[in-house]
Length: 429
Ligand code: SDX
Image (cartoon, rainbow, N blue to C red; front, side, top):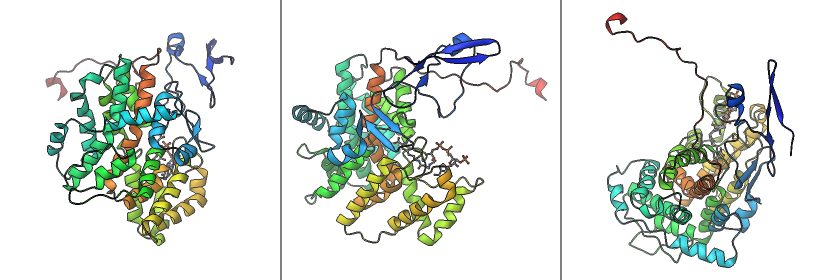
């Protein structure tokens, strides 16, 4: 047991318990601070605040380490597959062969959505951003699956979890097909998770769709790389929404809304748009200068991270996957890749980026890869949401099953007007 922290306020001293995790920083338990001192802590952006206790994912930002239930992300991405990682995140252990077979069977047979779901899509404009469609359609699932919205029932919690993992790819593919004016393609139970997703996105009724195993493997690996990431903004959104008892479908819809932002999951779309705007290697210095200019809101999209102050381990695997996909497709001199690789080299040696520890993150290479796979930039964050659904659901389940769980309700530092009397309209001049 580690000793307590002592907080001295004038003559008064308050003891605050310290708690140790398995790995990573200890925490000062401040739950009793307000009661004992009348003080709040202040940490907008939660740069030094642990919002919960969790056993799912651990990141060491200085070492560039990402563990899911203790397993390094590179081993899971290179030796495992996405559904196996889903099982690991949900249940805490790698599955046996029998457990994997049963889990795959359950997920596969929940991939269809209620046929009336397709009517929601016809209400959207064809040029609606697919993320807008995903926020609406995932939230609408709670209007259909009433038999898995009772969060106090462990069976219903697991059914809802399986349904979310199984149906987000179908809804995402439907959003894409609707966006491009093609008919929806039903899921197929004889395909793997990634194969099925590519099939639902790119098959057309007029001819058989040939699955390319290299591309399917790359898609599966991209899903694994994006599966979970501690208490990032969208996961924290899902936890906060779930802390009120809201049903899991509504909580995941809230997570999708948060992920859409360009500072978060929207960065993969923004990074590719940035590379296209730069266009050629000779224009990189102009954009590097803009990124350093305090008066210019421009930032290098795909660079920097709240936690990683070393290379994002996912970015390394993403870069390898990017090269595999481009090689398989015979794309040799992709101008965007050339700009990306030159930009990365320049930024990694530029004092501004070195001092601020700004390295490429998972979003830097994913956009080039997804574009090569055939997805439009507007679908990039949708794919991130498909992958992150398992992380959101696993974190939501962990929170609901935590006996100490309470509704999340932060306080504030109030700097507005002190109390004053109402003034009538006539008296206001
Ligand atoms: C994801 O949290 C997660 O885990 C997220 C994620 C996940 O898997 O869930 O990893 C996915 O969201 C990855 C991040 C994708 N976002 C981007 O690529 C957008 C560009 N990056 C930045 O917006 C920024 O780096 C953030 C949002 C990612 C991190 O922001 P922080 O931690 O709040 O850092 P900051 O904005 O305070 O920046 C610190 C300094 C600032 O300079 P000073 O004010 O100290 O002088 O670094 C500068 C920033 O101006 N800076 C950048 C920069 N990122 C930070 N300068 C230029 N280009 C950048 N990309």
